[in-house]
Image (tube, rainbow, N blue to C red):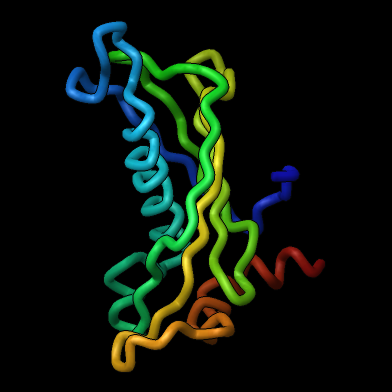
Length: 145
């Protein structure tokens, strides 16, 4: 995926716990999805549209696609930073992630795609609901300057 500047981003820190690592003290690859989720929630809080607000607006936003790369390991007791940034918001919500170790080296990157599903009908929306654009309005206005 080509590097796209996020409209808005946020960073979370995660300290790698013992129960996430293998015998070599390296975090198991499946746990990085959890680390992405931690950062995604920090980002969604920043825009005021986390999962409870999504539900209250009448939409669920399930992840329908996930891509991840692992150029380096996260290790037991290491504190990593995970940045999540919104790079697409028309027709789907794409969030890009980059995890870095304490030296700033990129250890994991990827993205998720989420789509709006009308909770009342169960139908997938083909266009982004206005509520997401309203939540992104401050950053959209700033980006058009």
